Image (cartoon, rainbow, N blue to C red; front, side, top):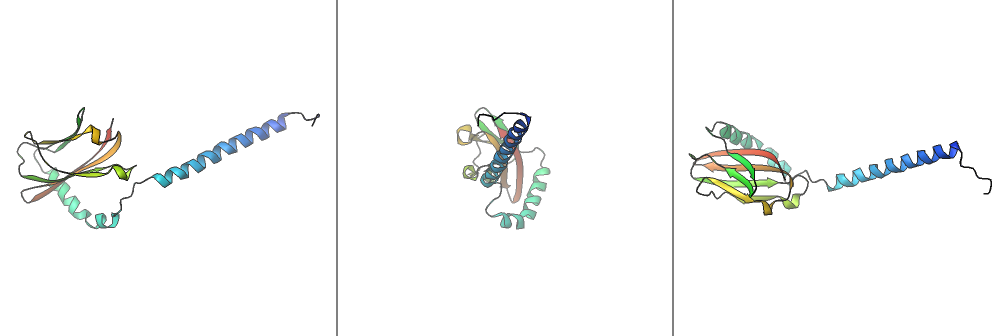
Length: 150
């Protein structure tokens, strides 16, 4: 090994091996991330069958004089219903696409100002899909919004 020289051929081989090892590292890492991606709901087929009802609920919500607002405040997520809406009952669904363990459903219990606050301590920062599914009288409504909590 005394006569070993590190000439340009060895340098090219070293660069090639380094490139391939980085490529293989990111390739394996991308598959590990796919395994932890939880963007599919457990009862997808049943939800798909009932989607026509969801479309009708969204149409009803679009015809309202004032829309239900989903706002991010320092205290948490605020769902503001119009003042003329009464006798509201239903659910607020909070869906976290990257972690199904954080998904939750909250029953609607409005305060005196026709709003409901979901405290920020109950939600982690990141992307959330918020669905408000309620009924006022006999008319069903649904509003959906994707938000990024900070």
